[in-house]
Image 1 (tube, helix red, strand yellow):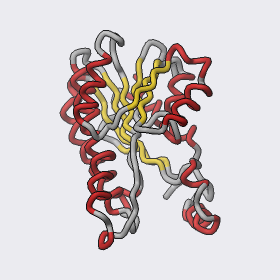
Image 2 (spheres, helix red, strand yellow):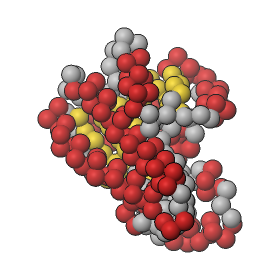
Image 3 (cartoon, helix red, strand yellow):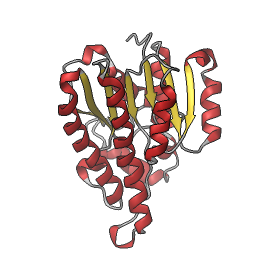
Image 4 (tube, helix red, strand yellow):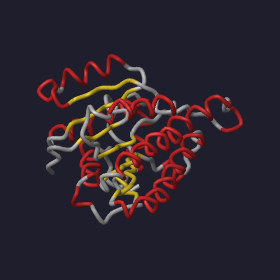
Length: 245
């Protein structure tokens, strides 16, 4: 796919799935604005690994849960970028616990980052995209929002809410030629999976009909399709990348 001349914002874009998505856009010719919340080392590693694309990389540090910070971020793009065609909402955190023992602060923080952060970024994105009557928004959700894994009530609620937000927003902006979709990755081979105890990782792998974990590149390919001009009649959808879960 050719994204030359287009600008893509990827939140949480310097590590894990977000980094894979950002790098896929870079290889496809796009300018990439990769955001991150706090991990300076990961941002520096991302920049170093993609030095050949340095002229098309812009790393920005802010918290997507902070409405004012998101507003300031979009204002900073005015004049610096002629347009922003793509937003990938990938930022997300987990603070697992059963509901009966979950600290109220952990509930709020996961909802704030995973769901309110998507609202914040989408609000300013559609304002910027509407004037040009073109845009692609891809929200990275999770099967947890569909199946409700135990110990992840806050995470599952945030991801299910993301799907509902996506469907509503897709209807609001369809006439402006802005599409809004979700990608739902299952067990993907990232640091999270690699850090699991061996027996738990095996149990997760056995639960996947394809009997393997997915790759970041496989997720990124799906994101790029939904962000492409060719996906012009796909909106309000959730594309599962789960190996058949």
